[in-house]
Amino acid sequence: MPTKPLDIVTIPTPSLRERSVELDSAVIGTPEFQAYLDVMMETMGSLGNAVGLAAPQVGRNERFMIVNLKRGAEIMINPEIEKRSDATVVDEEGCFSVPGVWGNVERAKRITVTWQNRHGRHETLDCKGLDSVVVQHEIDHLDGILFIDKVLEITRGKELLK
Image (cartoon, helix red, strand yellow):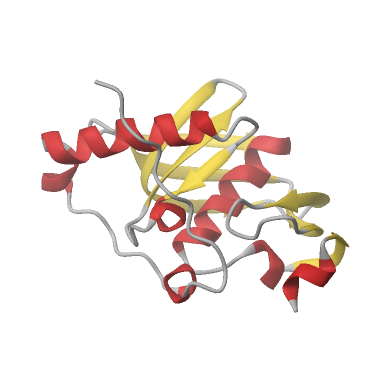
């Protein structure tokens, strides 16, 4: 059953600045939610070079996201960062919700994240490098924070923010 990819919500849409609500465990196993996760995965795949997509970016202010980690695509529901390293890394980030804009952002070099998977089971992962940056970027979306709120320097597309 082919589905149409979901539309990406872009700035200045107010919902991108709202904290998303936690998902109840009873919702996670429903056929409707599982089907939505599949469509969201297809949407992320249709974006080509996407490394992450959070629910607010497709119009749902609920705490779930998909991240492409070194070990593969991971659906994270109700994710929380349990630990952050003091060591940081500055890297260039962009975002489908802030099209055409790129900038340098400082983030924790390593994190430990916990979440529920699409089956409701709890998981924990220590992330470093790009995996750490991607998870932090997507969790920020769930908190109503965009990378441009943390940017040290806009490297491309500054004129698009006016």
